[in-house]
Image 1: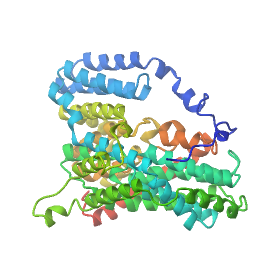
Image 2: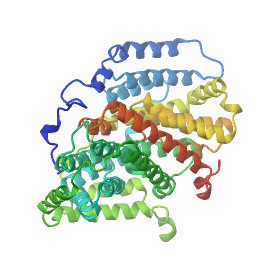
Image 3: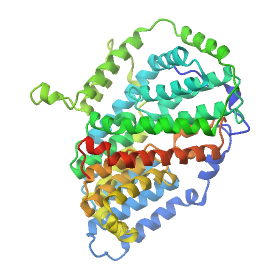
Image 4: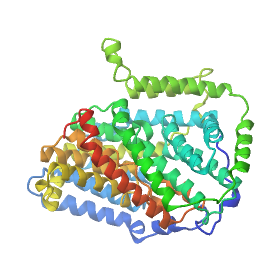
Length: 502
């Protein structure tokens, strides 16, 4: 299990205790949150009862009303996001926007099964202690200098993203290790530049590594499903990896170098003493356990099947195992008596996220299938003058708008549901390749890195007190600018080499 966070770090001058009011809690306690239900109802009724606009079918108007009402509640956070999704599903059925089978059928989508399997795999990884053993081994084996240690921690994030398909789970693993490291080095929260950079790099690495692996977060998988259903593009595990991982690694390298300039820490800490303590932590794990061996075998099989998914049809005369079936096979192996290492009650499946994703996906699909998204994007195109822009300008504008949209929408899944169908409709309206444009935008969805409330990962790292809101905002904006630039350049270079037309 991950090492407990020391209690001495729960109250600091630089950041609030997780149990005390802080900037994130103050932000939530706003008029929007307090009156979100009334505002959502007003938005819904205004759109539902307004005269039918030209070019928009009645079902499209209903879908727009339900979607915007749900969006208002998701953003306001007045009630839990899964309840909002349940209300949206009910509204879609009661208003006759789509049939009940369509509205309630989203929980049966393969992307939901993939998410369930991902949570089972995460629980198995945490219970087995395999990821923690690997992280400590990497630091003690290769982290000989301060800069090298930071680089190793970043590398660990990029490695474990293949095995732990949950941003929060990876942060829960890495934060205690970072805190132990900084405790040993006597880095003072709020004052130590080394501590600031280590924690902020953890935030950046978690997000950027996630952008490079399709199964790194549910948002990626939902984006792929939208691209398949609405644009006819089948993005496999290796397709995403080949397109996204080089961009993620390049962006991370540039972000790392900028971080070293922003937070200089020369002669700040004693590494020789700290490394011996970490070696002691590593030795305390003892020999590799049977549970760890089982976890290694299951994850090796899973990654092998995922990595070869695009080639199996050639090898086995049309037969292949999809990424969804592979994930469920891995989950079954983890739960299988004697073979696996988990019981069902130990699988930390977040059903609230499942329901939220189902409702968000139902609302997004309804908006697209009824023509509401196309009508809305048409208005956006006319309003911004996008139809007059060159192809290159459209790609750059869409990528940067998608990148910084997390400043408004704090949920990756909500952003995916809002942006990807709209971007697909925009591409179709302008005669561009919807798969390429939507895929490029999808790589920005994990960049929720500028403020503590923007993700659970941010909150976990911020609660340690090593960096301030302003420091995260400054470094986060720089990272987003770097990432947006790298993705924009890659669209016209690397994407073309991979066969994606504009």
